Amino acid sequence: MPSTDYSIRPVTTADNATVAAIIREVMPEFGAGGPGFAIHDAEVDGMAEAYSIPRAAYFVVEADGRVLGCGGVAALAGGDADVCELRKMYFLPALRGRGAGRALIERCLAAARTLGYRRCYLETLSGMDAAQALYLKTGFRRIDGPLGGTGHFSCDKFYLIDL
Image (cartoon, rainbow, N blue to C red; front, side):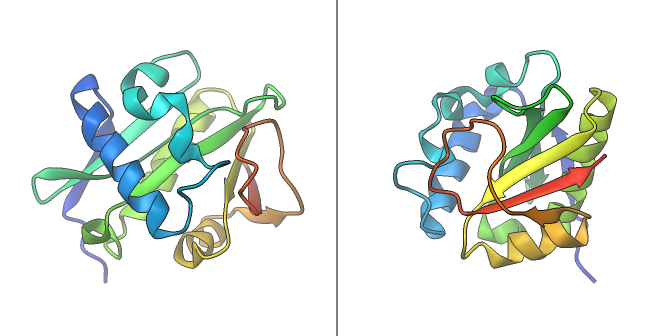
């Protein structure tokens, strides 16, 4: 059984540099360092500020005395008002396999419901197989193409869940 020796809490400005470092380390690990990926989004260096807006929430996962993962939800850019996007959910290797992924998704989906969303969308890419298996286990279903206008034109896998 996975270890649950971690905690999930809202991001703070003190976490910004750590979160940016996690995103910049993990995305290239899966071939997502080039154009058309979230690693290049302007918000990466200021996640606490970017998610302090209405109808948005971003969390960090702490374990072993450090922030090792992150993820959140916000309105889907260019999408319907009732659709949010699961955004920038990444874990360093030290956190993987401990059940934190499922716990963070559940926390994000609970936040999305509280914020008034009815559906949650996400996009990813081939090769992130463990993440995609987790999305399916938590109730997401594959959809044929992208929704909204995230600008992440290099993503090739798309998922949606009804909240």
